[in-house]
Image (cartoon, rainbow, N blue to C red; front, side, top):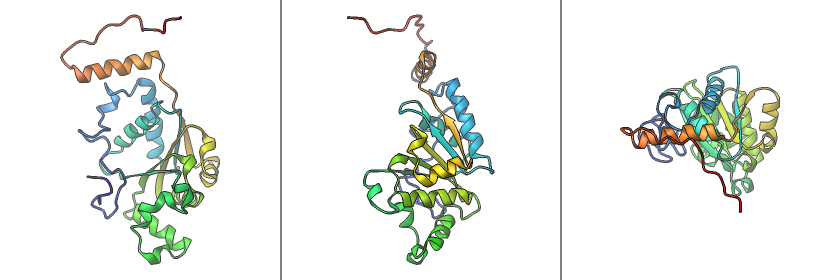
Length: 231
């Protein structure tokens, strides 16, 4: 499935290549074996997955520095939901912050004009689009600090209505727009922290990468890791 093509249910999915399917950029082996999902990160995956399948929550905020694996952890957790799960990816941007509802533009383009007449009709139009069969789509929101307030308000309402399952990844909680921060503080959004890899994690990732690239060769044994030479 290509970018912005219909997914068979009438809903266009941004960046809609199925996550976890063999051959995609996010393909994974079961439980992260040999894929770069370290044991520590796998525990994070389990926490995210538990939140995504919990009907009592609206979603999860995945907090960690860039390069910590927070996106990989989400991808793996989403894969474990199975083939019936739908994913919509939204990203804030400098341009989007200048346009009301800018982050939701590709979804709004699929509504009829009368569905955008009032906030009430707009919410119900988006709810029908994202949860028309009673199964909420998973909405992954990136660059939360660059999401316009009106989009954030609509996303927060959809999540609180259980019409979507929201996953936000960011470096710090304070990056959340006001309405999403309120949803988090109300306890409706879980909180998972992803930390940077240490030496043990790096060794695991490199060993797994070697096993995938050279499956018939034993991994090299390195008892000492290179360090910077003092000058």
